Length: 447
Image 1 (tube, rainbow, N blue to C red):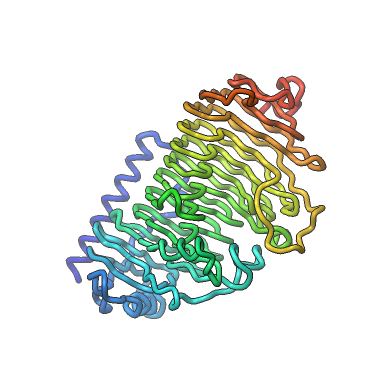
Image 2: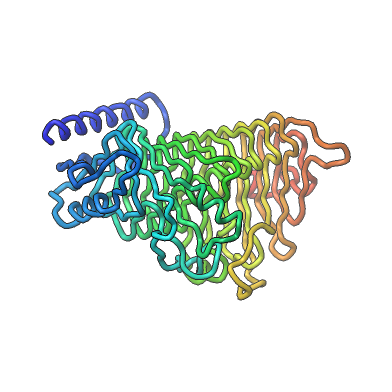
């Protein structure tokens, strides 16, 4: 065990030096909001009876390890080491002051026995499961009310084996909402880095009601036809940093959320201070998204240096009647997109409702959105910005946007309604609703 502790410490030291060198080399990063901690104690899952043969069920070993960390942990926390091998397990909870460290060629694999999956209550800002009424299946790796948690390693894999869940969704045999791969609730000071996430049953990484969260140097993979396998979904959370990652899934790469209709309005917790930087990926849906669940409000989102390939929509801000909430101060810049169906979409008619009790008079507000320095090739349609008649979108500012591609004959490159703002250096030229900056007051200051 002494040799293992030395080896893991050296790996952490090398990783820390590497990250520091990246910052010193000039890469801007937000990852400093949470400190990468070195643990004073190291235990291996094999010490608790874990067997990495891909067949043995290791649920008892993982739960015993978490119990030991929670109740017997030394000062400074404990690192749970996962050596090379495939460790099959049911879902399990994390605890505070721990690092889950996956070595190279280590795989934590979810069981496909859906009958063994525990149920938990719906999130209060959603009122029910996202897919079906009632509760929902607990995420594969779960945490509630924790702090100082790190999930990292040498690009080991967390495998959700989601196909069985996807097929239940397709066959409409689901009884409750599918589990996320990782969900952290009411938690703070979280780092997720240098791990591969594969085949999530539902959303991949879902921090909800959290603050100070860093997701960096991760790879998130799922087939294009896998339903609702969003990459990273910060939800009613603040100070979230998502950087330097590759995401290829069946749904939005990154989607900022904050609750669903009357439940999100009542809970009233916005997402704010979200930074998204140096993300590359592909999806049949959106690259960078806000919504559609935005009832608690979304503000101060900054995304830059995004590379998108084979996308449905490049940049998508989406909400709906009944959502309420204010979406404001959203900036997306330095985006390259290629082979995209729709470059930019801002819409007030997207998303379903949890029930029929939503308030049709709860209209969302969308204002002060800046999209600049965007270059696209093989873009079928540049953009669509459609606000609501009784709640027009305001301060929509487009600057230095070039989206090239063959537009279908008889189709306008841009579709706009109930929107005001400005456009400078946009090609093809957008709709008349986006006037010259001299007529838009404060909007001109953004671009």
